[in-house]
Figure 1 (cartoon, rainbow, N blue to C red):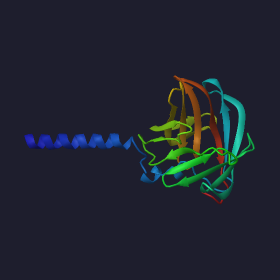
Figure 2: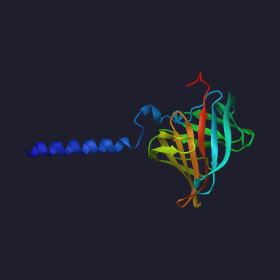
Figure 3: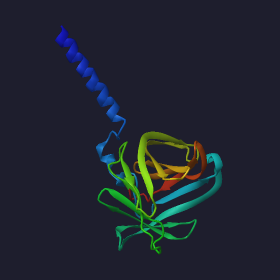
Figure 4: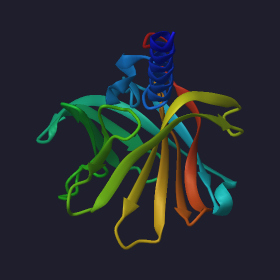
Length: 205
């Protein structure tokens, strides 16, 4: 009888450990790839609304469009054009990392915006010139009143900078991309941006 109780106790411990472990990563192992959180194809258009103090929508918006696939010295990826600046940025994927070069005319290195595996606890440091540190802190559903929908299973990433009182949160939704970015000081949102919609040509997934 005592042995049976011991076995049952061990099974319960293993069960709860398994259930807790499921919170640390997406339920689909394929979603641990960064490319599932930053899908890009020809003519994809992300429309964002700017957020002001306390993350209140300002009414201002801008569009980021994937204009073409390109190969640059950094690698093979996509040119993106922002309606806000008119400038061209460049996104490319090497091994487990998605790099983002904000301005193709700049001599500054790209940012490491996503590093796999995409699961809770994944941590990485950006290029030393920026000094940012990133940590995937949770997976959560994000309701957007701006988009009028709930983005399921978003990877919530915290970006910090040593010595700075502010930090950023990013929410990346599978098959969609970045759905929200917010700058915080303590618990107060200072500004950010939130996705209103993603337009895809009908012949692309």
